[in-house]
Amino acid sequence: MDIIYTIWLRSMKRYIRSKSRIIGSISMPMFFLLFLGFGLNSVVNIPGFGENYIQFLMPGMVAMSVLFTSVFSGIQIIWDKQFGFLKETLVAPVTRMEIMLGQTFGGATTAVIQGILIMVISLALGLKIQSMFGFLIALGFMVIIGISFTAFGIAIASRMEDMTGFQLIMNFVIFPIFGLSGALFPIRSLPDWLSPITRIDPLTYGVEGIRYGLTGASQINPVLCFLVIGGFACGMTVIGAFLFRKISI
Image (cartoon, rainbow, N blue to C red; front, side, top):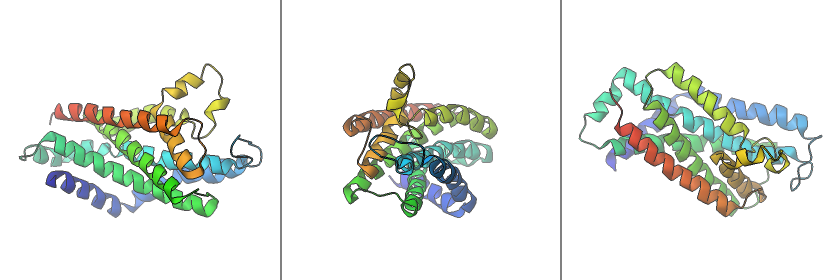
């Protein structure tokens, strides 16, 4: 457990010292909230949310912040490869599983912190959390999303050597995942041919879980959301650990 904690602590220190990273991770969700949210608030009517599109949008922006922060934390693996830190870690008398879990928990923690920051800003913009229990539900889903996609980012980074290539591939993969998750629009209003695609998107269940916790409304049963996103987190952790064990320096 010491090595897991040490690597987790290293990730936290890197995060706290990188003010530009914190601000950059907040900027895109805030752009959607301020421009898309207020711009469409008066013309979009979503069942269960009345005429308050911003109330519908805010949980999606929390999920967006967690998603992008967690996925791109995988770039630290490539960074450590290039500067020799990963080689020094791998030759230490610790298992690769411990190293991978430390990286995963560190990335997930920073992602959850980013999500909480967006949530706090959302409160100032009008988000109304139903209860403390609902907040804890949303926080739990944020943690699961963070673990899922940090492990996903580590799995991809374990097979790559170039940071630019990693960013390009992750942008190509993550934007469809986010766009089809129902963060920006209700999945019930989609055409029949598109709705099944959103149902196989794991982030859909994370977004709806956060939405249920914060607003009390969800388009998918929250128990099903927990089972799907929890299973995805376990699966990605196993895959990420397997690929990290195969990493070559």
